Length: 159
Image (cartoon, rainbow, N blue to C red):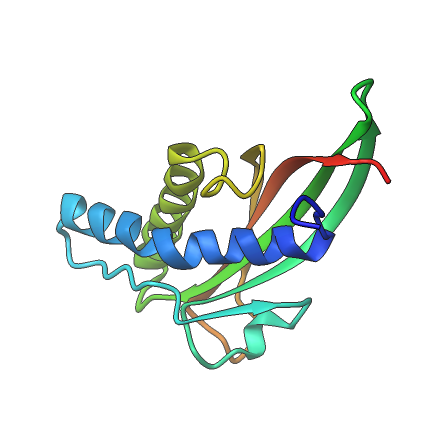
């Protein structure tokens, strides 16, 4: 039973990997830039497709699945591919600071995945496939959502 992979486990594993590691990259970037733009660690991680602009505890992250794909291989197993959307909402005092802050969070997310493509040996391969930005909604001025599309793969035995 120990080699059974459940699709939801990969989402939990990616969340836990970011929970453990992202803060260190944010701290490193803030220290390197040293210009007063604070990069806080994520306060809350939520799994589910929640309206991220309604979250009060910022910065926050929401993870939810995108496309799932099973690719058979000749070794009696399948390669399970999943897209995981990691949406992070941040705030800043000015629009200029918000843009710089958003780009620094992108750098931290990318560096976090690039440093360990196995996300702590929980997947066979992970990478950032795409990043999108969504402007704030009325009532949430000076906030932005960074949506990272993470592609993860894991070989799973058939049967």
